[in-house]
Image (tube, helix red, strand yellow):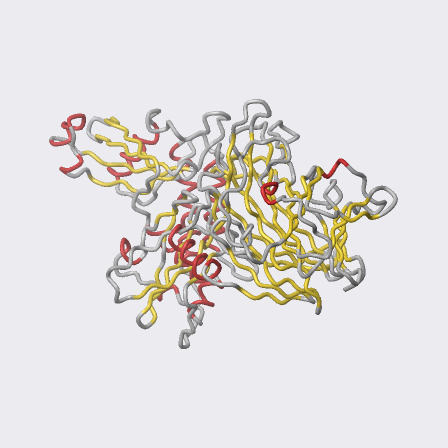
Length: 586
């Protein structure tokens, strides 16, 4: 059996090594580098645009190994004694303890990274016989668990003496994986964009693998990562490559001459880029007929401001103040989560990358665009870790939608999520409710549970208009928006916007308790029965979303599943938020 696996691996490895030599070269012009770096969406390179035969060969090999009785990728080309040590370890049940998923028995991705002669410093009381015998240290890496298993083998007695497990560690990386990391970095368009040219694989600093191909830590993904480093002038570009998924995580510039700069890691790269590009300044956005600024806040999510459609002001600002998460309607326990910037922040669930802007497609047609920001807990999708999404949808016809989303997993399958959305309306407006036959203005500040009244036949339940009659209808979510929403069931509040005092315009601390099941979600503290007709108004919108972990009915949920021998997250998202429809075409 081991012989068959060894033969399979040798054949595949030849293809892999040949592929690793096929690096396209190009002459580097002067670099026009980016000032900070970039965080890259976690996606493999398009094989048609950026062919990587080595990556494809590696994927084929891994899939074949997972089909074998002992799912271990072995090292080929070892001398006789080291090959024997590898085989002794691989066949021992103690060494095999983490080769399969404990619940399902499915194989996990495992690879022996090294077989080394035991050093004097390796010898312990349990391996004392190695002072008079020939012994080897066999290092196995488990990609799924980010786990290193070390076996001490005596080849004279043909026995595995000891087994040691080291969670959240990686052994020294074999040369072919170093070469693969360089190829992924060299072929990635983000690296070329940062450098100003497409690098040759030889451009990656290779004098010493441990310092040049830096064994960076991917603290958040807990994956095996390397950082090929490209030096240009007095600066170095770190390209962090996730070898578990075969993707580029991001790029980050450092000054070559500064010995005080720490090594770039997944977390430091993401935090630095997000802070400098999105937290420390406003970013203007002009697209189609929409204009606005956006900025990541310390604890109120992604804030948009000065929103205009054509020449008409629509919103002064909009943001996501809090997530209230309760797990019992009777015992009142849960969490209040803030979302925002990764450092110098009160947020518990933070942005690992900046916002994305994509076309909004309906029935194959582009009807607008989406501005989206994601926030993760570092342990997601494990229990009691969260993944939140904030979306602003802008349509070419003047409609817009403000959306809060959750992708689990949380601390239980009986949770209710209540995102607190705050929208400061532009200009002076009056707010009205559809009574069933007519629109009736609210004369003073107030609140209502959305299902307590019926909408118009078009689905409009509320409205705000200025003195000219222009404004927006508000259409709560009832499952009609095509994103699998189950309905908003929202609390709606309208308060007077006071220019002379801050009632939520700046970053807010946690507003309201986590677990109230009534209208007391935080915005009610700003209700003072003040008149609100033809006034500057703030709309607060608090949907209520119930999660489920029942198989076949998962909602606001996430699970870890095995994919090619590695645990990956499968999310079951839930979204909520109203659509705003122009009363008259602005």
